[in-house]
Length: 131
Image 1 (tube, rainbow, N blue to C red):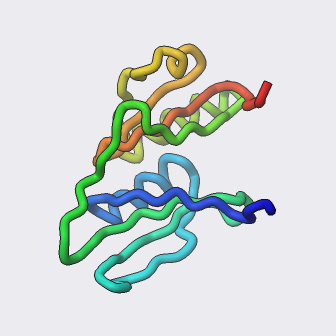
Image 2 (image 1 turned 60 degrees about the vertical axis):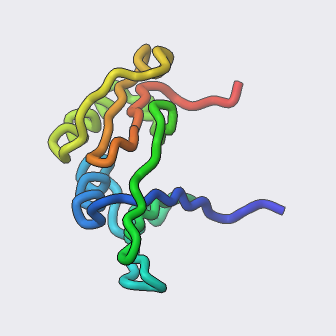
Image 3 (image 1 turned 180 degrees about the horizontal axis):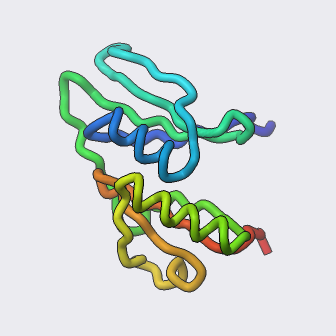
């Protein structure tokens, strides 16, 4: 059996700010949101044409601190050099900050950025292949 869609879920400290950063920086859009569902609110960002999206959540009655490591990465592949460069500029304008990659592999053909909660996104200037 094959799954039909993938959701990456992460707790954040500010839903609206995080949504804006990822939409502006990565060219994603707000797909849907929910408010105070059993004490949680959330927003989903993505591209309806893609089989995945990111869900950001916030717990109202209990602060859930984002827990990440330097190797928890969202890696996006942009084979076109100009497009990758534009995306990196957009990430900075959206409020991400460029950080040094913990694994030097990601710095060879890419740049690593962190959002306000410390979650890392790699803009990789190459095509992805499983070989």
